[in-house]
Length: 135
Image (cartoon, rainbow, N blue to C red; front, side, top):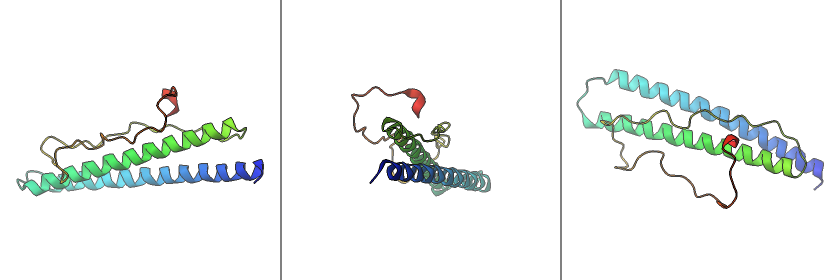
């Protein structure tokens, strides 16, 4: 494989990651809209299953945001790698805040007492300093 072949493959992957992140943003917005509609329709409901459903919505949204953040990280790492081997990729746009849809205290998800979105994947190499502006 030649350097131009690698450059083309990296550019295609870079575009694909961006498209997936855009799609994820749309899905997150749809989920937030559905959660808001469900909340409005069930205002005043005393059934604990309603609060559990709202908590599950919130947890799902947080997981989607985590996935979007991971896509942004992948795009940034890919761009760094490309630059390191002499390939120019468009700059990666950082995503805004990771989490917006935390459940209210009265909302509980089916998964129990753990807090949604607090788990992070282990970093492959924590010895290298990280640039906070990179993602």
